[in-house]
Amino acid sequence: MNEHETTPLTQSPGLPKSPEGEPVFAEPWMADAFAMVVGLYEKGLFDWDEWTHALSMQLNSRGRAEDGSDYFDCWVEALSNLIIDHGIVDMHEILDLQQSWQRAAEATPHGQPIELVNDPLR
Image 1 (tube, rainbow, N blue to C red):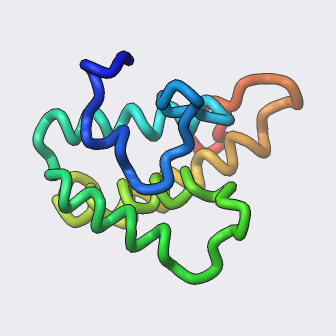
Image 2: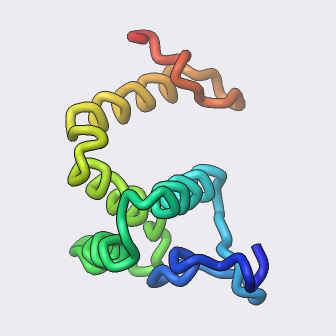
């Protein structure tokens, strides 16, 4: 992404950035979460003010990691709240999926990619 391709989302509060101003991600899931938000924003699911409010609520919540290492956890929580608020999914669907991923992780041999097909209850 160059300076001509920036979106308001790249200006999200606290977004970790490289010296060149590009978003940086410590783990692949963080990039996936970022991409999901960008895609839904570009489709008009929510506007910039709505996103910054949802993200700010999470970033300013109690119990945050002092070192900011939970930034993308806040990002995912803000996204979850928005898709629930917009009726795209409900809380039960999100919780079921979280539990499925957890079971898949527990059933996946060390060193192998965690995939939902590894959930023994799927």
